[in-house]
Length: 109
Image (cartoon, rainbow, N blue to C red; front, side, top):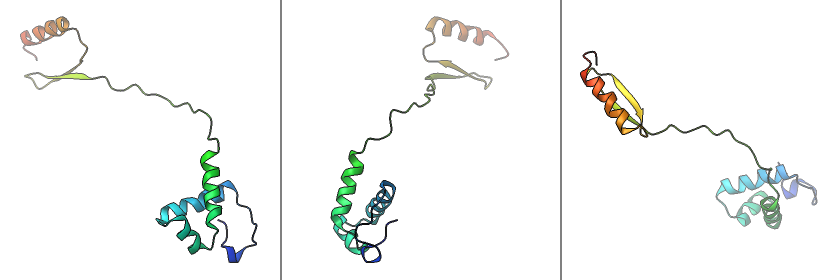
């Protein structure tokens, strides 16, 4: 982290990483830029310049992320036996009706 004004030569240059650390500390402090700069012995205008510089700096290029398919909506059917049957909510009504008919006739369910 950059040193305070009184502890360092007047024109010490900050790296973007150092400036980011100082700006993050200023934000976390809850103080205004002016108040933080006075407390830390820094030039407020320097903080403003770095903030503008870092905000306009090009960010990393596009990133690719893995997309996981979401769970499809489903219908939960609890059978008298306590067994649970899950079917997609897009199930054909006719097929679901036939399935339920078979399950109603079955003594094991």
